[in-house]
Length: 516
Image (tube, rainbow, N blue to C red; front, side, top):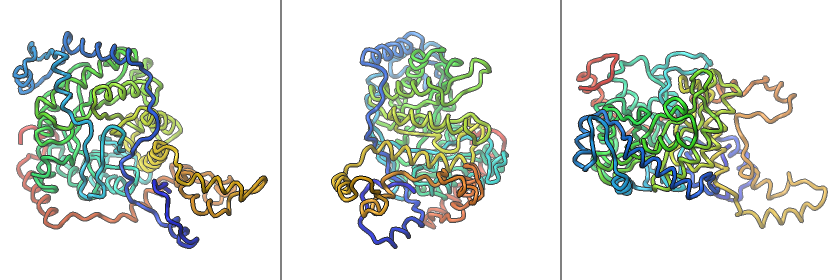
């Protein structure tokens, strides 16, 4: 049961019992963080890291493999040599200064709108898995139906604030047309905010055209409704595909994540602070370019952050250095006055085991301490992103709810009433039957649905299920209880017509749609 932020009104025992037995799928509001942040760098170290990043931008340069971006930078007065752009620190500071520090995400259901930035944060499921572990815990290729099931779960799990986009890849549709069905699934099965495909500039345009159908073209001009992600090729390269998609989102005034793809020690220096200096330079170059495209467009300091094993070269999750780097990046984002994104419940395990839990918990907790705004990959991620686990998806979402509760901070609204109960009970008594306990026990301490804290005898009597088995049963129950938040009939018809037309125009192929 997820604890609410407001003190409930007094109710009878029967009403309380009914409430306990009824699941509440209402989305939690955007997290308003009240805990102090963990900031391992002092002011001098922040300045030192900033200076190192600006030195990289001015003297090493960043490659923009895109003729339009190169022309844009020349027009801005940047020094361009072949495909390398050298950015003056004054220009960078001026450009990123126009990025909004806060904005509001607008969902199809206005009750699911989300204030974002500064001390407001959201949880977003994982995306991009080429495999899934299904309701039978079988690892296999996903279908569009599997993707729909994940979107349904994201809709029903209160701590998840978005349906994301291609949580898993639907292999039963051609790659060239897949983005259309993915976007429609995000819109159809949830009325929360969602993400938009950036797999090609043309695909990004399709996503935004569908958003214009859903919300209205004029609405997009001053209402963020969808998030795009643009990954860099670390070290210090941005390619034509990502930059073209970035332009599509920024021109329509929609938020974009500017995300260097960091494998610490492989495509960055093998040391924490220098790795962050390079990542910071990469992120700043993309953030600056968003403002070249459209001044004032919302943009988010992003990154995918992992370290690599020096034994095998494989990416790792949950390491102490990842936590430290996230805390440092949070400080840098606040130093520049921009919201930022990181990855939450990452795991490298092949099954939903103790490794998966430890790695995810370490990463999630570091993000709370670091003050992350956009917590992506918050549910389902395992095997270094190669599969999304149905079981882990629902457990991760409950872990997000627990992290949400902790980050809300200490509640004082019932302090006097509860302290008065001490005198009522006195030495040697117990509080289990006291009116304050009966009124407040549901909100006093988080009670997980998916972790078992009963005696071993009760656990055995109930089947002796481990967390993976309980989670799969829970996911089945949720899907059986799902009720679709139906699209308006005219909007649904217009979306279907758009998809049908674009599928006629785009040749069905196992390649990205770059031209049609």
